[in-house]
Length: 95
Image (cartoon, rainbow, N blue to C red):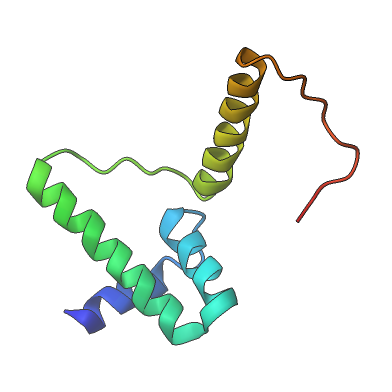
């Protein structure tokens, strides 16, 4: 089953979806094999949840994590504004 899941991950490598972007992100930090196995784990987790809930899979997109982080930053800014702080965007971006 592991081999089949890794082959499925490799088949998504040229697509613009969540699994391919997950593999690329992990591969940058930890290497090819760990990226493949981690993405296979993500794929199997998605398959398990589809079977468990019976709901169809909805693709979140390749930039799902960036959007989620931006939403968190916007929510934090709104929270701080409600608390009475003044927030001004900085000119330079931080890493």
